[in-house]
Image 1 (tube, helix red, strand yellow):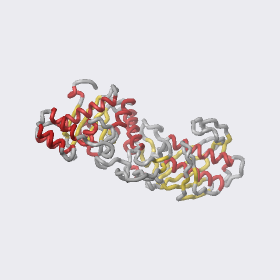
Image 2 (cartoon, rainbow, N blue to C red):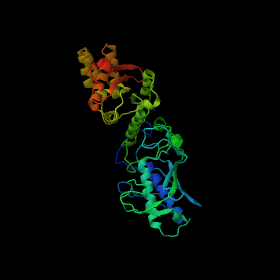
Image 3 (cartoon, rainbow, N blue to C red):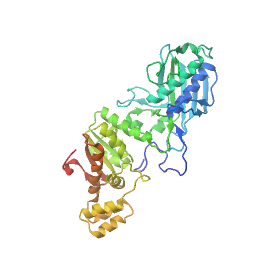
Image 4 (cartoon, one colour):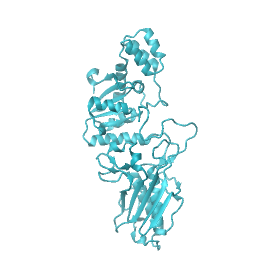
Length: 412
């Protein structure tokens, strides 16, 4: 990953034209589990299998694998992320459903390629498989709906004995608010979710840093992947802050890429779980820290991205914000640069080019950018108890600008 390439993405350039939506790993796991459980009850796999998403949509999924054995069934679907550059696109998500002890409820297991939570701070307990709460609710509701249609019927494997008739009004058998009250059966099964090559794919995500070991997370709140929404990235930023807080870290660094991370490690000795892969989403970091503060935040990034933050932009992506060279020229002039330097800065090709012009003229443009970026960050934090430091680097990782509370002389 370089300074322009986020983790967990197949590529960052958005194609032209209307974009195709996709399905989350949570939706794929729900489809696979629904097909497997249906086969466990009936002896037949529904192909395609239709599920109901939290928003009421009813997509159908073709099965890529199916296997029925005494007391268990396995089905798999291929993850289709649509036009979103998601590294899990094309992954095979499989679910094995087997009968569990009476009144066990629905038990989730991590199969090959699905990670296990090893650190506090996530919405799952340490030791749990990394199957997030909403996909769990989707699977419980889907299997309960299948079970409801087979209550009192003879089933292929005798699994009817593992269907408990219950009255559900706005929730499932364990009290979670998972359904709309239409389902009136609960089941006793074990669901094992796996992803082919998931451990390798997970190396290109934030999971290792979040303490999710051994594979991917099964994610999704709506079941739908919106192309280029970057919702998964923003969610990972939030979970990174949660993990850092749970670990007791009082200092975190928000970095725009791998070079920035190396600088943060070198200057402050921060561990991996105190490094936030901010990428272009400065606003996501600052707004979440406003509600969940950590005492010391260091923002590290290249001059171009931090020049945008200095100008008040919170999304630093090149397609959604641009460097204001005229504003940099004004900064240079205010810092003692002459009219000719100001003109050359305004007509420079890049922010880095403008910085080099100023460095040659003895004008500390990097420090000025850092100071203004820090002011933007403090404005977003709205008085939250967070000390903000900003470090500006060039492409080689050399520090070319710095602003901190000590230099600012006031506030946090």
